Length: 150
Image 1: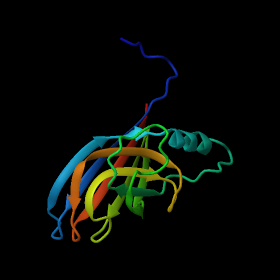
Image 2: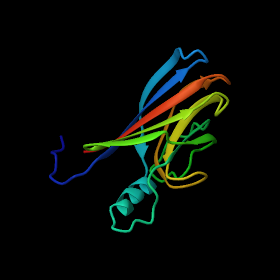
Image 3: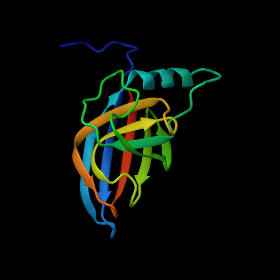
C-alpha cells in the first residue's frame, strides 16, 4: 500500500451524460471517469502564470471513436460535434463544466468525449470513452464534467 505524500497534487475528472428525448424525458444517464491528458496538465500549469498563453477550457466534443484514451492524446479519435460550454463554475478544489448538444447536433452512436480550450482544435484537458449512447436527431445530450484537484 502506498502512503500519501505531502504536496502530491492529483487531477481527476468525472463526467455525467444525460440524454433526453424531445419531450425532455430522461432516456439515459451515465457517470464516467476520464483521463486527464498531458496537454491538459500543460494548460493548467500555464494558466498559473502571471501572463498565461493558453486559453481556459471553453468547449466539449463528442465522437464515435473507441480507441482507449492515452495520456498523449490531443484530440478525439473521431470527433462528431463540438460545442461551447454553457457554464464553467469553480468551487473550492473543483471546476464543473457544462455543455449541451442540442437536437440535430452530434447524432449517432456516441462513444467518446473530450474537454478543450478552443474550437476547432485547441488543447485537450480530458478524454474518455464509453459504451455507445445513441443520440437521435431530436435528442438533447447534456454533459456535466467535474474536474477535481486533490
